[in-house]
Length: 304
Ligand SMILES: Cc1cc2nc3c(=O)[nH]c(=O)nc-3n(C[C@H](O)[C@H](O)[C@H](O)COP(=O)(O)OP(=O)(O)OC[C@H]3O[C@@H](n4cnc5c(N)ncnc54)[C@H](O)[C@@H]3O)c2cc1C
Ligand code: SF4
Image (cartoon, rainbow, N blue to C red; front, side, top):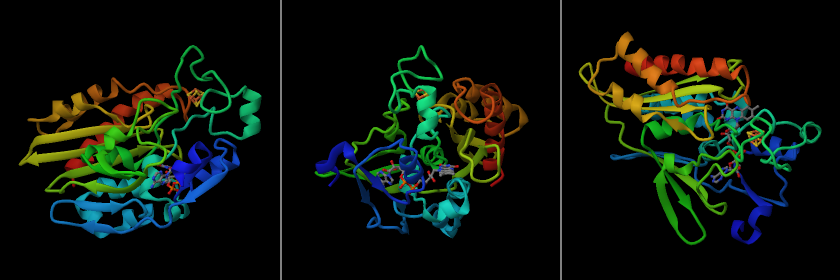
């Protein structure tokens, strides 16, 4: 159906992001293709854990096995928006959720009064008018943890099914933010063996519920005794894609988690984060807070 209908159709899973955007005419389509048929179970195998795309955020956050083995992932699912939306919103929808911007996530009338922007109905960027690209912000809470874990995403297309690292699902572009084809469905997320990995997610937002992240840090840590043997740090909401700060992760390898190492890693992690003035609160403050969320996430992962 998606191939036949092309850009005039969209998939809908929980609809928690899609329906408000249809109402605000950010998306204008003739048809919605319901994904209710997608499986929605969590399978714990010997070598991996598979989370079907149709699993709700509430189920993922409450799942005892996910909480025990991939605590940061379950935690990220549990801090998305609010309980009613988590009961309907899905893991697949959270991976594919649209990028956000204060000039775009507005009613049609507001956007019209502002002159529209290139993400919808216009041709300039209202945040960075001299820029030829859109800087809308990647705002998925679960994607950064999935990337830190080295998870894979499974896609079903009209001809073939394929699998790719979650990181490869994203592009550094506020408009074309997904690398998958529009007619490909996300069917599952494959988490590698936990094998002692410690994960954490720290999210910054104005209110403790409902709000999207305005900065966040996901950490996946491996330790041998007190020494870090592996560390991946991925930032949310500071770029148009979940931003892995590999240099900061590599810096931690061979070190102990203490105030000094964590502070130095957080300094490195904050450098590539360049939030613009298109999300809640001041972007200068958000930039400063990246250090803080990284420090907190590293310590939290270590304490697990
Ligand atoms: C008030 C409010 C607050 C929110 N706060 C947060 C937040 O804090 N953090 C956060 O991450 N999100 C937040 N969201 C967004 C949203 O609720 C979640 O991201 C949710 O996980 C989306 O899942 P869904 O199943 O409802 O997706 P839908 O709304 O159904 O779809 C979202 C997008 O993904 C596509 N899609 C859905 N499933 C698939 C699939 N399996 N394969 C291919 N494409 C698919 C749809 O076509 C659409 O483009 C918020 C939304 C609202 C309205
Ligand atoms: S970053 Fe610019 S182009 Fe993108 S949604 Fe915001 S104002 Fe529009």
